[in-house]
Length: 255
Image (cartoon, rainbow, N blue to C red; front, side, top):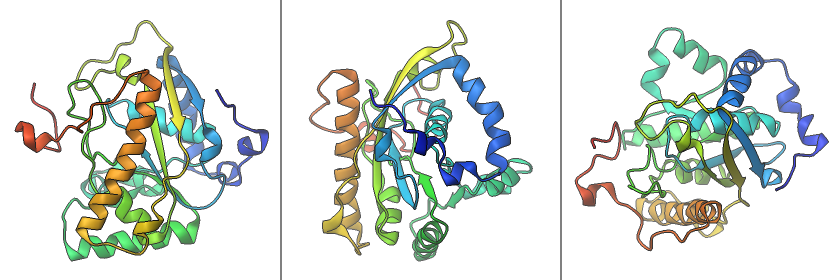
């Protein structure tokens, strides 16, 4: 297991006063009650500059664990969130105050232009963003990463940003997918690994749907490999496709 370096602890982004400090004072100890987080590969997260972080997603508790890991590594955790959430009182203010990124799920030219503007803003401010490439909790019955959506690579290619694959395992023991929070015993072991940036150079500067789909497969292959390493198992040869099993790809999964 790798450990974070002193210079990463003193990251300039984390050292700037912000709303994150207030939220961190609440979220970090709260998450620490539930999860004993073990981080490896932390040096793959850039100390400065923009990036896209692409984690697997199998529990509603995932964002808290990922956010704490990114915070520990010296970066401010910012997520892409549904644009409708920004219109919710109080929540919308918190999302804007922490620099979260609104995203539209509509596949329109306006949404494509918004992706480019978002990428430009990330580059301009040197910020990273966390994007779940699956778009929702995995539908795979064994919690393997399912088919990905193109949002993460679309954003990365629009701004020529590095994509950092992330895998974690153990969060499902805290809050099973669409299940109930398990308060006891506390400090369940959660392992997380940050992989090396995914090589997307062959797709650079392209935004055609077929290209985005191929690039997404490359990212999902890497995320799946990391999950397989954590689990000590071989991943399925075919990635779960919700539509092929009569499932919706967003929203709550009907059992």
